[in-house]
Length: 253
Image 1 (cartoon, rainbow, N blue to C red):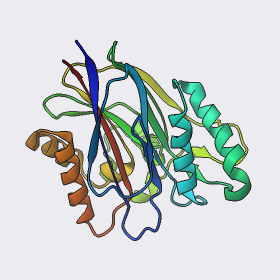
Image 2 (spheres, one colour; image 1 turned 60 degrees about the vertical axis):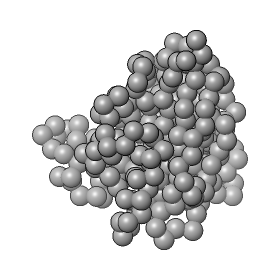
Image 3 (cartoon, rainbow, N blue to C red; image 1 turned 180 degrees about the vertical axis):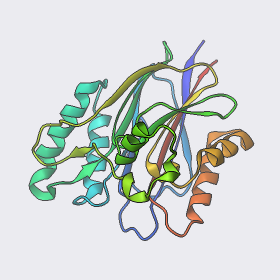
């Protein structure tokens, strides 16, 4: 038997933006531009890493931080909680002199195709989801945002009950010479046959409701078509953010 993963990925620049503030690493290359279509590749290495970073829009040249975070990730053999401290140090060393305060979220997954296990690491509000064979989404990561903290305090409330001003991140990577002292999410999960792992910036989850995303996944039978539909629906909106998505699904033949 041979193990391999199908990796599907896409990006879209937000409306009225000169630069894509997102960056993604698909396990092979770093991307930071508008992909005209969703693309896919096959991965047969037993062990690999993918990731997404979303530059904080009100920081100094956020596209610099997100791209560098993914470039650094592409050089790593493994990830752990220590990875965040290393990234913070590297961003400060390489960016702080010219782009002080450049900041980004970060979410990455280290996949082991033999054990079907994944390490999930994140800072900020970029997310990881586990999607089952029926198209049901389960959020893995915990957002580091003011809104997430409010929801934890008011369990009877939903995201739409709060004003959008509370959407700002409460933890992120920043090129400012300081040591990382904020929140980190880290978890190891097992991926069952038929399940897929999705990493994304908030350009996906803020623009399409959970109900709409699950409807798309159940209506279409492949990830490339699903992401194409997502991109088109988001682009029809008057204002939309940058979008980056990476999906990994495991096969055995």
